[in-house]
Image (cartoon, one colour):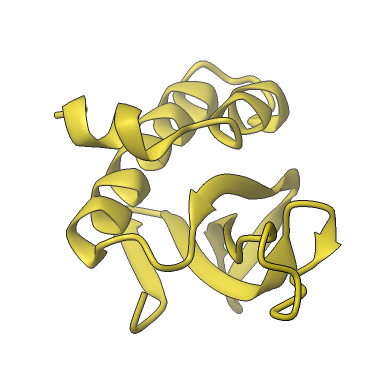
Length: 111
């Protein structure tokens, strides 16, 4: 991935970044079995900008090397789930936990 992805819809924001996380904690470039993974953050607009939701930031199973088009699609999929949770008046915690398990294969077939 060459850059961080940010998607804003209305008062909601999803950011996808690489912060050096791997399969078992910090990414270890010296471990041939480790993979650098992407993390997402979800936030809501306030008077002072955006504030992160509690318990809505998760490491994914999606490698940081994933094609940008698929990472942008991931942001859209996560945003849809975030909107559902917020519009329903509930906490985004559980839906965002589920989003952390999204795979590249699922993104390839997502619309």
